[in-house]
Image (cartoon, rainbow, N blue to C red; front, side, top):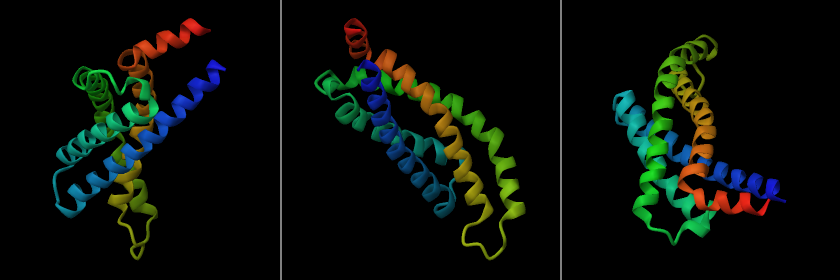
Length: 156
């Protein structure tokens, strides 16, 4: 029963993470390809907006029993873990974007509706977000939502 509960919690966390991914990729594309903002500032700003989105939905839906706790201390813990995830994500993004974009430059035809740079950027961002998902879930579960974890472990 506890395993099923944890699994459903992870599924909810993943759904919230997916909504944050939509925010992250959408804002990143808007800033980078419409407003021509440089890569690092655009993915940084999109990341920050995704963190706020995820904090809100995790607090309200994934861990609703924590929505009555003080917001600022909880947001600080959530943000610290997210920033560590960003620190993991940024060099991975820098490492993989060029090879992935180059790969798509070779296979995407000129008349294809999406540019290889856009495809490479988005797939790289999606790839590193999935990697960081596991760090975020475990760290936030252990630190940000610690009382809930202890309560579940006591029931086992």
